[in-house]
Image (cartoon, rainbow, N blue to C red):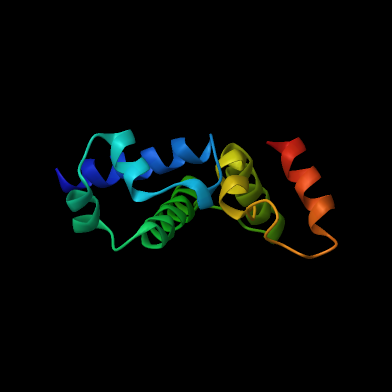
Length: 118
C-alpha cells in the first residue's frame, strides 16, 4: 500500500508540473490531486524537495534498467536526452524561475526558449 501511495504522490506532482511551475505547487495541491491528506504526504516525504529527489532517482534507475547494454558515452547521453524529452514539460516547469525573480540578462532569452519548448 505504501508503494501505491508514493506512486500516486509522484504521479500527482508530475501531472501538476505539466500545468504550472514548481514554485506554484504546494503540498496541498499535491494531496488534493491524488486524494490523500497532508499527514499521509508527510508520512512518506519530508517535503517537495525530497519528493523531487525520489522522482529523479526513479527516472535515473528506469533509464539504467531500460538500457542495460549501453556501451558508449553517446549511447548513454542519447538515452538520457530521450528520457528528458519524454518529460520535458515537467522538467522545464521545475527549473524555470518564477517571473521577475532572476536578474540575469540571459533570463529573457532562456524564458523565451523555455516557453517555446513547453
